[in-house]
Length: 284
Image 1 (cartoon, one colour):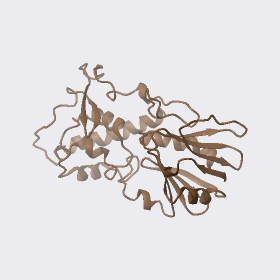
Image 2 (cartoon, one colour):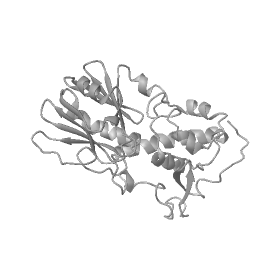
Image 3 (tube, helix red, strand yellow):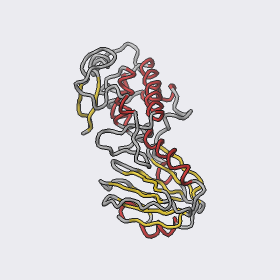
Image 4 (cartoon, one colour):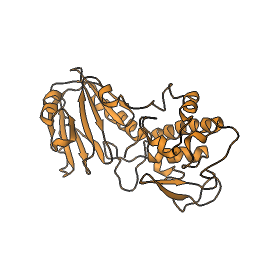
């Protein structure tokens, strides 16, 4: 599933093509792609609208329209946008779920092999994204906030960080990387982190996400994340633990291990990230 760096990269890639352009044609090929309203109503509402901005909230793309509505997209596991120049003949794909043509002839297609991605059309984006926690790259995400938010939490820190109502945009890849950078075991009870560890985690989350954005996101071997022009991200070349079970930890030389949490693979170094439960005199 594309995480914050991947969605941010997509936003930056499509923004120059869409902002200021008007939808001349809209077609949804698989109706359940549209969560709200109906697919037919969505297409009618989009045609004739100009895109004022393309932004991101958590893992959602937000297209602000001249009608006052916002088109929100959650790509889920396999959703992808592709941009084709005017005059080009877009390739035929059985995974194409929606097709758009802009007033300059540019083609904007949405493909989704697993069909989990969803479109939303809302007058107020809060209707769709109001449940999300703070953005980890914005000023509201502070060490003080994180330290207080961890207080009294009994669940595992890895699972908590994946909760979009806690912090928006984090996913399996960047949580695993951040916990390795911070030296925190993924199964630690969140409430046992000390203020010092919370500070390290705060720094590590921001660093992992910023590096992911700088490198254009992570394109794994399944190629489920690609750019709108078909290009690949480069962050997979810099991952320290994710999907590296059995490889050598670059920090201590021990073997990276894998465990399963909530049906998701977690990768960590058992030496650098300590033990599952640590007793500390300095509790939150």
